[in-house]
Amino acid sequence: MRGFGGAGGFGGRRGGEDGAPVELRFIDLLLIIIATLMFLAVLLSLVSANTPAGQQQETKPPKVEIATAKAPDALAGSPYELTLAAVGGVAPYHWDRTSGDLPEGLTLTPEGVLTGRAEQPADAPGEVRTTVRVEDSKGQRAERTLSLKVRRAAEEGAERPRLRVVSKTVAVPEGKKGEAYPAHRFAADAGSGSYTWEPAGTLPDGMKLSSRGELTGKPAEEGIFTFGIRVTDSTGLQAEQQVRLVVGEVRPEKDSDVWDAPWWLLALAAIGSLVVLQILKLIFFGRPQLVAREVPGMFRR
Image (cartoon, rainbow, N blue to C red; front, side, top):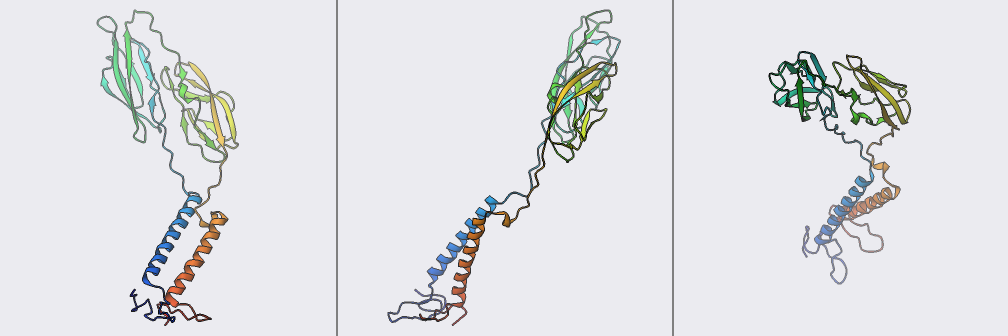
């Protein structure tokens, strides 16, 4: 087979009494290159599989939902104020109305407060259905249809539901010891006016609860903590709820480094590298003459 340098191989010389080529033939070089590339591909795959990732994927915020399921009855001519509640997503929230009508005299503010003085209905009181929508700071949206009944001023039985902390906030997101806690805002519904929040007991060390209901801080200890929170509306009604916070230990992240691979993988890489270097040395510079006939390379003749 004719090689790059002439008949018989790379150097174009033939050695041995039987006329067999001493040099590597072209097909031999091609097979060596293919084998070398396969070895490197397998080696890189093993390194990638055994090297920890240097970055963590960004966690997606929880889906935003409207927690207020029922609007209390309004009494015609009397002040009415209901703060709608949302859970999940990322505060602040923006509220609006997408369909349906509100009773005459009532409006919905962008902060989610249904307020005003409902006008007395001309006929028998009936339910008015309206669909409200909330949007968080990340653009997530949620809708819910609420029913609201306006009772006449002389009519009795317009009973309001009790103030409560939204049940979905019992378990707050997990925190890490010594790291800033992602602010979690509690929600309540069925109250009047604005809400004021405060701890009902002792918070975990390093944590604090603002009057707006935001839990922030840096947990000082790891463990599972249970504490109480209290909400008060503008009329003085109060509601309490127990909350559970899990604080985990921060594990140092390792940067992606080939030296973090197992010892056997490093040994395999070293041996494979030496073999590849020897093959390349033989191809380009040939084998020096010791006992057998000298094998010329591409650059050494």
